[in-house]
Length: 295
Image 1 (cartoon, rainbow, N blue to C red):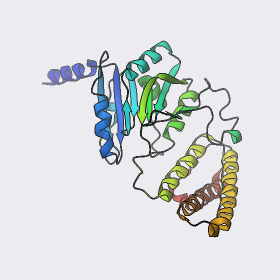
Image 2 (image 1 turned 60 degrees about the horizontal axis):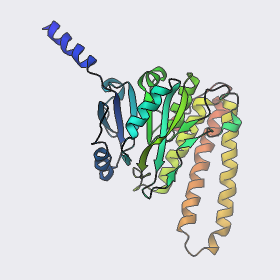
Image 3 (image 1 turned 90 degrees about the vertical axis):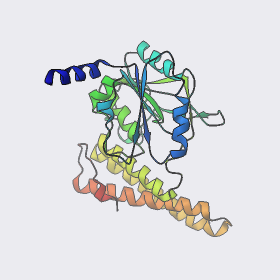
Image 4 (image 1 turned 135 degrees about the horizontal axis):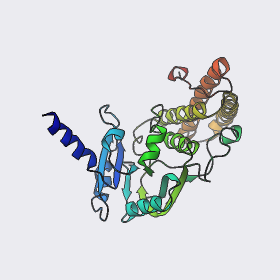
């Protein structure tokens, strides 16, 4: 009985494929079907598709995927013909690249920004990012292909991030581990964008974004750099709140201005908490701000 079980395990482990496509789903029921339909005509490569629902706790990308490469795809995205083969071909030609993004387009065909050469708050943390390999800092997480061994090497995604900032964190950790970040313009993916949060209040969305931003700073920058970044954001938030309140009486439609005010109120609260925490506990070592500082 034991030998039969071992044989089954051995067969399962050897049944690998070229590409594992990982789609993280969160409140995008109307788009996930279209996303999967766009992958139906995969040809020329062996692939598996894994859909991970963010409300579940029982799935693990690291244990289920078998591909030499891992493809992370948003559910509100549609892969164009030939994109997957172009991604694999690019990584096979460039062994120094650990993760790469591709050309994202809007539904009307216009280009969507998907590559960045700088990290948030980078001007305050030059020492922390000195000597990194490659010119690309990070790529948009809506569509990314990575080497399985590279992802395993850095321990996968950081669970402290939720919905925002995880691609910046992952790309920086990969570069610190000696990998380059790449860009594949010949691989085209349509990205609708923002569909997971379409029913949420703008202030709630901004809170998640600012929390992710602060988590990134505390994960990679010194305590001194984090304090400077927090202070800069606090000054900007105060200035914007004062100026918006002064102009508010002169606008007939005040909805947009109220949304902007909400944004800067949230920014002030998040970065005030981060700054207070760093002053109590921060130093020149990297530190993690717990969720309790965000009131």
